[in-house]
Length: 284
Image (cartoon, rainbow, N blue to C red; front, side, top):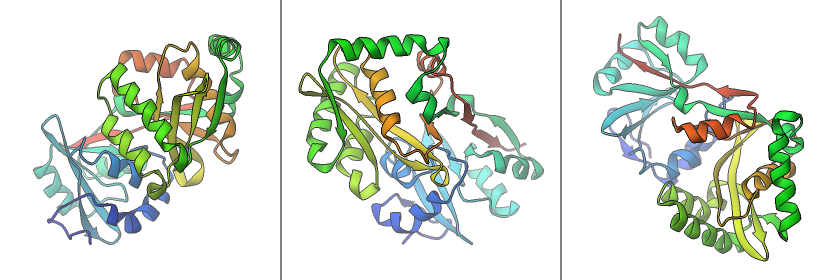
């Protein structure tokens, strides 16, 4: 049972029954706001949760020693909001629809560009049209011409192969989001995550894992891992997975760049159709 505020609880898998339907109903498609994401990154961000009543929940966390809170399902009355801003440095993952409410209450709201989610048209990631995406097509063609490859659904019997990819990825790249990614593979069925796995020359070389978001209109990629020096592999996986997603997903959310300039440049080269904007709010 999720405790009533001001009591807080660590995030438990037992809370999924109550929270998953609420997250599924959110239309704005903020990548943090799925139960799977909150659960898998609970230790990374020190997440805790409290029930506010009236279907509202408070999620708190600490990043780099700075305490924050999030209100994915709506804002409580101003007295409680003032109390939260006394306890926490900022409110994170403020949605577009919450901005006028918060500014109307007298809080300062600013864009959090480093955490904007990148949105791409699924069809464009499949076709890669135009001169600006010519380099992507060239890399994919080089991969297809030079390697023997196979893509398969990431089902339970192939989890071991995906874990092999993840372990080798950690050896090559460092820790990163390894813990969350590993648990995501281990609990994919329980968290209703789905994905694909890719083999090169008969060996597992890449996988991708995500879920439905934005009220069923988009698909968010939570994890995408590839290993080795296979030229064009990431580009191939990106296109291949987009091509097998159901057409009901108009857009693919590839999450944020976290202020990493190299990652920002890479994400921009795929010509996003837009962003899921997020904001931070603080006391005036």
